[in-house]
Structure formats: C-alpha cells, structure tokens
Image 1 (cartoon, rainbow, N blue to C red):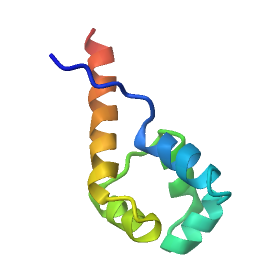
Image 2: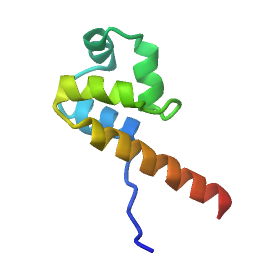
Image 3: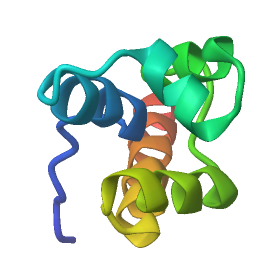
Image 4: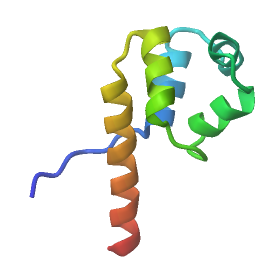
Amino acid sequence: MIDLKVRYSAGEFLKIMVLEERGLTQKWLAEELGCAERKISEICNNKRGISADFALQLEKVFGISAEMWVTMQAKWELYNARQKVA
C-alpha cells in the first residue's frame, strides 16, 4: 500500500500556510466570504471540515483549487479513521 504522508489537515493548512503566511486573519476571511468568524475558527481548529462548497469559495479567494482542499480534507479524515481502528 502507498503511504501518503498527512502533514496538515485542510483547516491547519488554511490557518498556517495560507492565512498566517499572508498576514491575514480569520476575521478578514470571514468578512471576505460573508460567513461567521466562528465557522473559520472551527475549520482552522479541526472542529469542522471543509465542504466542497466552502472549497469553491476558498478557490475564488486564494486561487488554490477546490480539488486540493477537498482532497486534503478527505486524506485527513481517512488518516484519523485509520488511527481509530489501528
């Protein structure tokens, strides 16, 4: 089996590699997307996943493909499921 390294959840990637690296805040992103800041916080802190719809919104704002976001989210969820059954 191919072992794909999971370094970040999609939310951690958003928080660390996108927002922090660009000097942006969760509040800014919430305003940009027209959603609650709580939603962004929950995603960044792994309390909520990134849906396909949200991935499309992120694609528009950051130019990072929706496929990348949903793939990263799926890999994170699969990684966590494997940890539970191991």
